[in-house]
Every structure is written in structure tokens, then in C-alpha cells.
Length: 289
Length: 315
Image (cartoon, rainbow over all chains, first blue to last red; front, side, top):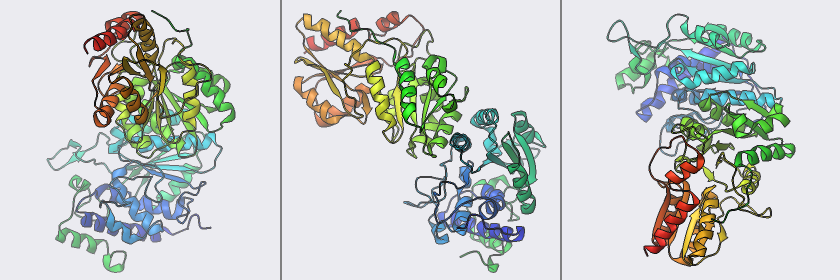
């Protein structure tokens, strides 16, 4: 049975491109939702779901599957788009995002959405859940890997560092944390100019913090899919400590006017903005409605 | 005052019982918030070290990790002081345990007024109100060591999240060893005709002693123990309230939203009757010896008898 399907970095980039189209379509249709964070994460999510995770989309609860927890749960639409493209549910269902009675809630709900291994949305908690999955898997002598994606803003939360202590103490080398370090959060701190906003982490500070808590830290460009896949391989080979991959990304990656603009954390595009984004994402090449 | 036979503390009964249950139930694991030497999960660690997980002082993380473990079919028993589970880790419980209905058992130790000279930070007596208002949550407050053992055996096999309220001191024995606990069932402890008293947790022993004292004065208390505050045994509550036509609730807990709140809500809808809530009066706690705390805050057996006497006399 299909578990992973090897795709080239170019193919994965095209899947991420299609996911970005679906993300903006869903947000525009719902007239609400996050865009910037989903776009910074899209390349990595495509790589994980199409090339890394041992999963069975036709059997979402397959007991031996790798687990993935989107701890930055407000980027749910990115995960839903990739899950749909991977075959967990019809891509048409993405149009129900945030609608009443939808399986595609604003933040992931493990009780209703195929492929969601852990509910999340209150920042930092998905990470704790993922640590529990990894520790429980070890207790049960099970052989899968747990992946968890956090935001850099999410790393403001104290519970992240509570978990970082405990994950390191237990040497959870069956867990890989990916920090989507897009350098922005919803509002953040005022920067040099009035339009610039920042997180508390500049340069290597975020990597240094994870390292200080006892994690094996790797850094990568989260939009360089080939490099990201290599980094995942490197992470999987680490023994005795959990790994934090600090993925340097660009918030809003893929659409020129969104990149690096904190106001696209959560915003609905105008018709003109939507058309421009579709043009830049190559919607005429396929992937959209 | 008539006194009941002394018993062990609920925490010791808890430590012993989970240790015993784990011998035949491989799903059980214990997560400790660095209080195992107090809450007595140390008993479990001694026998099952590979199934005991020290989480350190990371309550929000601990409750989240328990949720993750539960997704694998384990039955995580999470133990620390009630205040740190219910207050400090409230969001973890709400988001990762209650809403997804994960099979995590939350054991709030040192609940109530008698947490050993700790004072306002640790004395947790709004835990039942808070946990009762959370969707999907079951709330259990055993009376003594016997019921603690029976209740733990029952809740390990009861699917979904359960909050169990335990206390620190040695507690008198209310129940015989053939007592059968069932989640969601209230039980008549003493028959009487003058007033129905509903109590829960370790306050039931004090209410029992109060009832024995009042019997000598000719006041016959119909005492009903309500170990499961949610889901409430509505049928029994309504029937036993109607037997005497007036109701007093008594608990080592705030009168706002706990047992008294739950029963007032239920009777208000199903059987409006004169009702008095007895318990802790919208206050924070303080340090002090147990007897002094029980007296000052009005829930000692004597003060409980006073409350019942006043309520009956006022009618």
C-alpha cells in the first residue's frame, strides 16, 4: 500500500504552488482566514505529505502512520489544502473552510477532519500533544516518527519551553519539531519604521534558544525543498535528542505584495489582489478552480 | 459528636489503587507534576517505573502530553495538586482533552480547604465549578478511601476525560467494603424525614457526623452522597429531595457552581423546593491547622450541624 510517494523537489514545489492557490481561494470564499503563515509553511507541508510522512490517505487512522501535528493551528487552511491534494478528502471540500457544519474548522479538530492527528489552535499546545505522542510511542515500543510544526511567534508561549525541557529530558529522538521562522507574528513589536514589525528573535536567537534547551538544532531555508528534504533526513538520523529544524521562511511567500508584510497574517484579498495573486501563482497552469 | 472509623487519606488510596490496577491493565501510565511524594504516585513509580513519567513542573505541557499519549490508546493518569491541574493547565484540558474527548484521567490532589499549611495559592475549592462547566468533562469527588478505590477502578474503564477530586488528610470511613460505585449515581447514606442533605467528597463524613448529632435533638437528616457531580444523578436528586421537601447542600467547596450550584439548578428546573447551600462563601483560603480552617470557614461537623439546624428551624 502506498505510504510515501517520492516526488522531485520541482514536483513538490508545484504541489505547494497549487496549495497556495487553494488556500487563497478558500480564504476569499470564506471571507476570512489566515494567509501569511499558511504561505510560509506551504512548501514544507507539501514536502512532508508527499515525500516524507509514512501515511495512508485512504486509511487516515492507520496505527503505524507517522504523526504530524500543526501546532501553529491558525495555518490550518494550508494543511487542509495539502491533505486534500494528497487525497484525504475532495479538494472541492476546501470551499467549506470555516463554514457552518464544515469539517474544516478555523483551527484543526482531530474529531472531525480526516488526517488531523491532534487538535490545535491555542498556541503551544499542539507541541505538547506531539511530545506526548512521541513519549507514548516510545512507551509502546512503536516505530513511527512524530513531526510537529510550530510558528516563531508561537515560541513566545511558555508552554513551548516547558515542553522543550521535557522533550530533551526524555531524549525524544522520534520527534522532529519544525519551526516556521517567518520573522513575523500577528502584530509583534514595532521595528525601525512604522510599517515594520518584529518577533523577539533576530539572527540566530531562535536557534540558540532551542539549542540551549538541549535540542539538536538544524537550520534550513524552508522554501528550498531539496534542502528541506535533506535536513529531514539529517534530523531522522539524530540519536538521543529531539531535533528542532529552524526553517527560515518568508511570511506570505509566493505572492509579491504579501511577502514580509505582517498585515497579511490574516486578511481577505480584494478582487484585484486575488486576481494578481492567481496570476503570480500561475493559476492558468492549473491547480485552481 | 459521633465519629466515624478513621481511614486512610484519599491520596494513599489513590496511589495504592492505580498501582494495583496497572498490574492487569497495560494501558495505564502515570504523569506526575513533580508532586508524587505528596500525591502518592510514588507508590506507582516504585512498582511500575517504566510507566511512570515525571513531567517536572510543567502543568500546561503535562496535560498536553497526556492528551498525545491518549491518542495512542494509553490511559494517562495525570496527577498533581488540583490548583495546578484545574487553574494552571485549564487551556490544555479544554483544547486537547475535553473537546476531543480524549481518555485522560485528571487527578486533582490536595483539593479543598485542607492542603497542609499552604494557603491561598494551593487551597483550591472552585475546581468542581470550573471542571463542571467544561463540556465533555465528568467530575467525581469520592468520600473516603473505600469509594476512592472503587471510583478509580470504574473511571479507568469509563471512556473519556474524568476529573477526580482528592484531598490530603486522613479521612473517616463512610462506606462498607461491599459498596458499589457507579459513575453518575448518587447514594443514600442515611435515612431521615426532616431535611435532605446532599453532600459530596470528604464533606460527606462531616455531614454524617452532623446528622448523628442532630438525631439526638430529634432532627432526622436524610443524607445523600453525590460522588459524581457531573453527570448529575437527576432522578435520584429529585426523588430524594421530594422525600423531605427541603434541601441543604454541603460541600468543601465554594457554594458557587459546585455541588450546591448543580443541585439548585436541577431542582429549580425539576422540583422547586426550599434550598440552602452550605460550603465555602466566595472567599480565598489561608494557611492554618485543619481543625481551625474547618471551624473558621464553617464546614466542620459542628458548623455543618449548625447550618442544618438553622435551616430546619427557620422553616
